[in-house]
Length: 190
Image 1 (cartoon, rainbow, N blue to C red):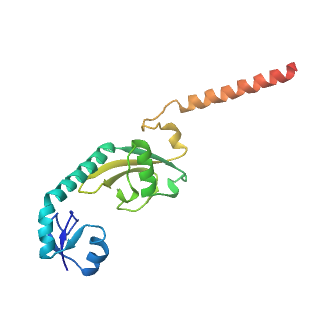
Image 2 (image 1 turned 60 degrees about the vertical axis):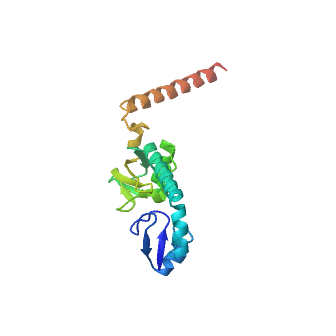
Image 3 (image 1 turned 90 degrees about the vertical axis):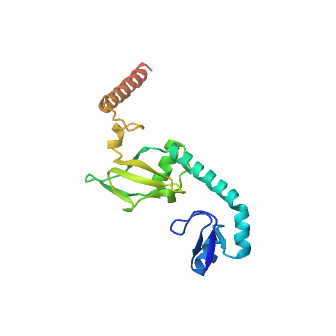
């Protein structure tokens, strides 16, 4: 079945191209999604009238995708998870976890389907380079650091290492001791 594409579709072609596809693909996906129309003389004439409108809409969507990409450009995420001493995760980090963390950090609206994980979910601690496919040939690379909950205590939200973790813990212990001594002193006075 021949169709006229109303938007750019991966391997089929650009806006306005005529493509030959299987009838089921056209009826069940392309037509309901508004991505194509049957290639008839009447539809071809109608498309030529709407060509500039469709191209303007396409360019607007490309601009929106590029704006979304600029929000997350070069993002570096730190995801804290439970892990064994050998660095194996208890569970995994998937596209949903990454999209949620990225949306919380960057204030973006990345969907889990836009996170590309060619090697599957993350099951080990470490740093990973991932790509976001934001549609309309717009991609953005991000870095994801998966750290164990204990080691994450020494990492700040921006990824810098906090060297005074032990000093902070000692100060907290000292405060607890002082509070305990103060409460003991109050009890002995009564």
